Image (cartoon, rainbow, N blue to C red; front, side, top):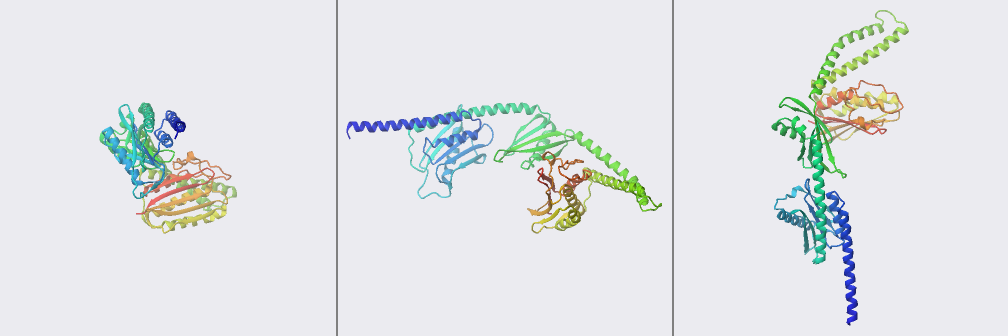
Length: 516
């Protein structure tokens, strides 16, 4: 090859290298510029991983960061189908490297892993990790992460590629330091706000570890032994849906703490932790008890004179004291109807009083829920036919007998179906469904009625609460105690009851009972 040809080839090579360097620097600039604005660890990892393959060849890229707080995150990206054994090898190598850099034990169980790409179970014959390169991430003089590229091919990383990786790692370290500083500042602000709240506040992370516990909560939960016991009691409910309970605390003085817990989830519905609010409701409960006792006393006292009035009106209507003209008869019929309504209200008030006092008596025996459902639906067959409503019996599989008070459970079913009848228009459907799952019987009364506003669903079981539902029919008002009584009966049987509804799309009232 002549000197001229050699110069042309060398010029081509240098031009190509220059284009490659310009491209790599352009990508590096885009990544650095992108991560300089992010305020989230996951977003930081995603931006780096999505762009890195443009400047460095790899089969596996892994990014591990130890946040100032919260769960450690290991993100892995695969550029081709890779055997799981190689991924595990890279993961173990990263953890071992960071243990040495930090002189700290890091448990595999404390790390959440996110892998994107196709995983194969078995490697091809002779395959192994042949090339890898690690770049540590530092905040100050402390290692906070590691960026690793690896390949099952024999790749020699050039000095330029290594420099690019170190430059990128430096930019990532600055971003991590900024995120950590922001989190510390936000935590400090939140701590001041939480400490100033009159309500007790507890926050648990995704591992159920207590991370926030303000002064008001400490005061409500009393001495050290009580605090430990009370927190353990609250933690039993951590993984449930929003929950409420009253906690009896005995020291230094007996008092009642109302607990409300709310699950915290991310956009992908992954569990992040729980926020718990505490309120001292001792005086409220004492007032409630006095009101219940007063209502119970008055109701008992009203029963005797009411029975006498009812008897007198019945005698008059039966003609015991002589014939009545039409106007007199009509007035007495109206009076009797209201006496009966008052008697039902008194009976309901007494039931609520017994439930609140814990004095409700259950006469348990072997009960066939399937038979109870059939009996209740028969009871409403004629009224439903008169309103043009379809009643459906949906029993799934074989439902075993339960140990329950048949009268009380039938009372609940009757109340739920009766409510559905009130709010279902002509041509609608009411279904009563029974199913069994893991020794729990689930009963559901579903209607195609007007539905319940979302803000009223949780209040529906409160005393005297009545929903104003939309619709074209006049609905006869009840006492507003039927659902309260139903809730007390189901909970006394060790079950749960709740409502699900959407305005304009009907409602479902569901309760569960254990199969003993």
